[in-house]
Amino acid sequence: MARPTEVEPGEQKAPVIQPGHTFASITEKIGAIVLKRPIMGGWVFGMFICFLILQWFLFAVCWLFYKGVGVWGVNIPVGWGFAIVNFVWWIGIGHAGTLISAILLLLRQSWRNSINRFAEAMTLFAVACAGMFPIFHLLVWDVFAVTTYLTISLVFWFVGLIPDLASLRDQTSNKALKFIFGSLAMGWRNSVRHWNRYETAYLLLGGLATPLVLSVHTVVSFDFSVGIVPGWHTTIFPPYFVAGAIYSGFAMVLVLAIPIRKFYGITDFITMRHLENSAMVMLATGWIVCYGYAFEAFMNWYGGDPYESFLRWNRLHGPYAWSYFLLLFSNLVVPQILWFKKIRTNPVWLFFISLDVLVGMWLERFVIVVVSLTRDFLNSSFGQYYPTQFDWAIFIGTLGFFAACMFLFMRVLPAVSISELKVLLPQAEVKVEHHEAEVHQ
Amino acid sequence: MKDPRIFGLMAEFGDVNSAITAARDTYAAGYRKLDAYSPFPVEELSEAIGFHKNGVPLICLIGGLLGGTAAFTLQWWINTISYPINIGGRPPNSWPSFIIVTFEMTILFSGLSAVFGMLALNGLPMPYHPVFNVPQFDAVTKDKFFIVIFSSDKKYDPVATRQFLEGLNPLSVAEVPS
Image (cartoon, rainbow over all chains, first blue to last red; front, top):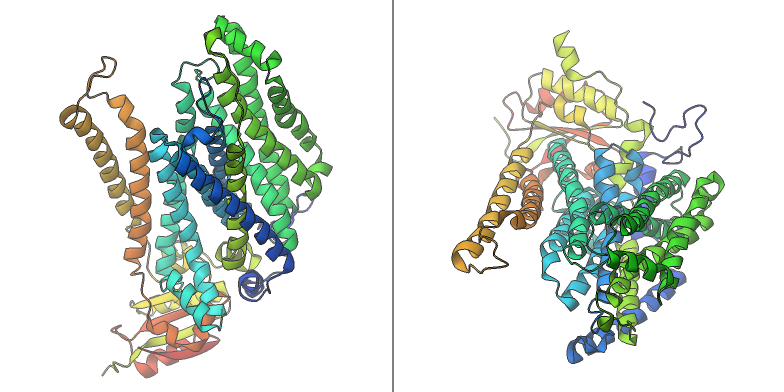
C-alpha cells in the first residue's frame, strides 16, 4: 500500500502531507506555533472580540440566575426554546470531532491524523457549550449521556496529547514552559513498551467512543421522540439526528480548518485532501438528513393522523414557514454544488457552504423544537415564540466562548498531532521483515 | 561487580529500520532487560525487544463490567428497594428504561480504566527517569531512536556491552547515569 504522502500514479487526490517533510521538520513546524511564533495582531484582535462576547454572555447568565428563566422568551405553549435548540445544535457539532478521532481511526483512514487534534478540541469546546444549556435548563435525562461524552472526549484528547506534550518539553529551553509541559506529559519518554500499551488504550478508546457518539445524539433525540407532540413522536429521529450531527460537525471542522491552515501556515499538513474529504462527508450526511426530511413528510401523509397532516401544512404555510424553507434551501439545495470538484477544492466556497450548513442545521433544530410546540392538538393552546435579548445573548455568548477557547488552544497546545503525523511519512515505513517470519524459517 | 551509579548503556539510531534490526540483534544476543525508544509508535520495535502483549484490554474489560453492573444495580436498588414509585402502572424493576444509563456507565468506566490502566502499567506519572540524563535523548521526541540495555541485566558488562552496542552501527553510544 502506498503511503498517504505519496501520490499514486494516475491518482487525482492531493497528498495528506506535502512531500519533503522529515520527522524533525514536522516536530519543529508544529512546535514552533506554540513555542516560537510571536503573538500576532490578528490573534489579539480576534481574541479581544471573543472576550467581549464572553463578557456579554457572563452578564446574560448572571441576570438569568438572578431573575430566573422568565428573562427568556419561553412560555406556554413553547416551553422549550433557544436553550434546547442550542443544546442540540452544539452537541451535534461536537460529534464530528469524535467521528474523526474514533470512527476514522477504526476505519484506518490515516488522513484523519492531521485534523483529529483540533477536531477533538472543537468537540470538547462544543460539548462544553452544549453542557451549559442543560445546566441553565436542567434536563436531567441527558446528564449521563453528556457527561460521559465529555469525559471520554477529554480523556481521548488528553491521551493523544501526551506524546506531543513530551515533544514540546524536549524542544523548549524555557524553564517555566519545560516545567509546565513536562508536568502535563507526566514523564512520557517514548518507550516502546509505553507506546505499545498506549496504542492499545487509544484503539480501545476509539472503539468505545464510536458507540458512545452514536448513543449521545440518539439519547438527545429520545428527548423528543418520547413526547407525543406532532413532529416529535417519530422513530426516524435517532439516525436522522446522528447524521445531522455529523453534517453540522464537519461543517464546523471546515469553518475552523480553512482559516487555521491559512493563518498558521500549515497547508502542508491540512491539505486539499482533508478539505475535499470533509466536503464529501458533508455531502453524504447531508443526503441522509434529506432522507430524514423526506421520510418525515411521507409519514405525515401516509400515517393519516390529522395532527401530523396539520404539522406538515403548518411547516409549509404556517407563520414559521420561512424557517422551514430556509432550512431546505440551506441543507438541501446549497450543498449540492459540492458535487463539483472545483467547488470541493476551493477553500473560499467550502467556507461559505459550511457556514450555510451550520445555519441550516440550527434552523432544523428550531423547526423541530419551536415550530412543533407552537401548534399542538388544541387550537386554544396555539401560540407564538418570541426570543428575548437574553436568548440571543446566551446563544451568541456560547459562540464567543467557543471561539475564545479555540483561539487559546491554537496558541498553547500543538494543533496538529506531531507523533501521529510522523507515522504517515515514508521514512516511518518498516522495511525489515517481520520477526515471527524469521523465527519460523 | 555492577556500578550502582550506572543505569545502563544507550545507543542512538537515525532511522526506524536500523533501530529494529539492532533491537533484534540485542535480544538475540541474550539481553532481556532492555528498552527501546522511538518518536512514534512502532509495533515491530516493541516486538523486537520481546514485548508482545499488554494488560490494558483486560483492565478495560473489567472496568466496563464493573461500570455496567454498578449502574444497573444502582438503578434497580433505587427503583425497587430504596424508593419504589408507581409510574403509570409499570413494575418497579422496569429494566428496559435502565439500559441507557447502564450503557453510558459501561463506556465511561471502560474508557477511564483503559486510560488509567495504561498510565499505571507504564508507571506514569514518573517525573524523573535516568534516560533523561543523557543530553542526546531529547531528540527521542523529534527524530531519533534509542536502545538502552539496563545494568540490571545478567549479561550486562560495562566493557563488553559497550563493544556489542558499538558493533550495531549506532550514531552514538552513551552511559546512562542513574
